[in-house]
Length: 180
Image 1 (spheres, helix red, strand yellow):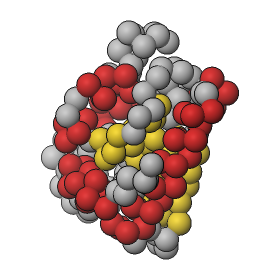
Image 2 (cartoon, helix red, strand yellow):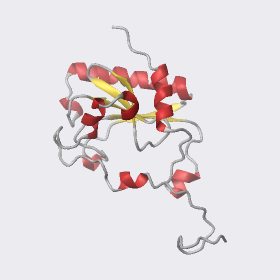
Image 3 (cartoon, helix red, strand yellow):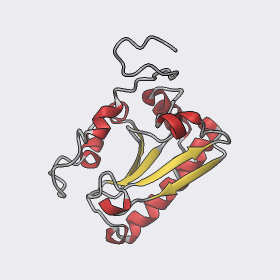
Image 4 (tube, one colour):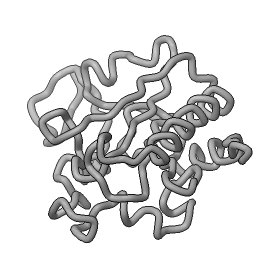
């Protein structure tokens, strides 16, 4: 047993503190409403520089941005600039560019990080798990054999081996802009 000096009842567990996650848990920077002027981070991010906003690439209708609270290193999202909540609210050009950016995200994550697989998808609506339901976004989560270990399973903690700004830089360097 270790002396935990006031950290609860003594046990055999070591603690890995991740206080930055408290902002996500408390819902800091979550929109106050459903409109684009209601504090939507996906509307605010494009107004920032790429490094400050963690933007990997910008298109005409969508952009790719690293997730501030990633499930895995390189977890990014493809987001339309237009504030819409449903996939069926996108027009044909937005759907096409969102698809092309998703394909490019897969290529960039394979090239920069050697991803062996991916989880790709959208949570449409709060009851479906969308953290920010008012603004559509598609998750692209790179996966590797053995990337799930005791930390997320037992400790509900994800260990990320690289700072988000460094990951953004690597992905931006290998991101290929489609010809056209």
